[in-house]
Length: 261
Length: 261
DNA sequence: GGCGATTGGGTACCATGTACGCAAACAAGG
DNA sequence: CCTTGTTTGCGTACATGGTACCCAATCGCC
Image (cartoon, rainbow over all chains, first blue to last red):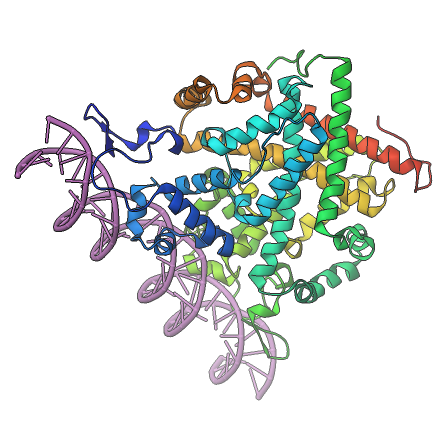
């Protein structure tokens, strides 16, 4: 694809991931566009109309380029999605993050992560894997893991942060699902509920789902603001972390010591 | 699409979801296939080669039908995916589930759910929303929520189960991501690690990511068996639930229930 | 100034979901 | 039994999406 200084061809497969691939070589005409610009345009479209609307042709049109021109900047659409994912990770503000007050830090992180997911609902559909971690994602890991680094061994820290992230992502995923359902059907929340009434009613009337019925009839949770639900659950998770900090402070033995692989 | 007994046409839009749509009318030639058969075939393909490999043509070929024949049984591919999702939910064995020992029940549920996700990694990519809950999903909710129903108010129960499910799904999602990465690259785990070494090495050498470096160098977690990681984290989540049961048992609800084993 | 790599982008190919139409199959009324 | 209305299986066809390939225009470096 490119030629390095030795003049040898460098094939695509040479690069482990996009982050190892140079944005542009120092030769030939000046590029009209840029990875950042393309990524930005793609995010704009995905935010407004979903990730599936961000097609190569559409993105190209958005920046006034020809469809195939994008491939001068990005090896494939999948890779572009990785760029998008890392780009939005950068929106999470973790400046001054190990502030000393871990609970405040994690609360802020949780709020920011959730807000970011809600701004860019399509990240719910992209799965990340370790080697695709870009600079923003890495910096985030750095700051987030830094919050508890002084208090617990690294393994414990990994476990706790996995729990925290799972909670945040799981919760937001549900918010996104229902929001997407509304959008898909083009109905308002109340219209949508009216529409699904026949189904829910049939289930309730069948008598086979007493607890489901209880949820439908009694639960107030669904009527609370999403923000309150989230914050309430988050407090519980943080309590959990507090307990774990306590116990490791007492017996500093990291978990899984006695376990063979 | 179909005609009801009055002879009036019933359009697709009349149905809230697939579960409200009758499988087949009582007229015309006997269908050669069935929803269940089609769903089964689709799952088989998706398990082996990913959800994107389960195309309509491929599924049809699998059962020896023409591509368009599937649309006599399923309104769209999206709806078929919903059928698939509910079908695999049915694999989770929750018989006799409110057994009295909530901790054992939830542990069993967690193990089963995780095992099911690992058998059918593609569910990670399908997002569920309330109205698409099929019979198996509903039965699962029924049994799972039943486990703590006697101990906590319904809203608390919802919150706790959301936390539990988030933990399970978040953890398994990561397992799936890396497994998929291996499969995609066609490499073994060690080959794959060797391949991504240049990237990791560059990050470590840069000195900008001390905690990332610490994870790479010191953490033993990634070397533990996935099962152990999962079980360890799960215990922590269950402890969390235990604490929540404790606190709600003290104030609002009448006593008489016991505590974790 | 010329060489050779690189850029923009048009054309084209293949895969996918699915609308449409038609002939064969079959239940119910005569 | 035959007619009639409806459904089934499925081939054809189209719109859309990713992207391989090609070519002329562009520009850094000798």
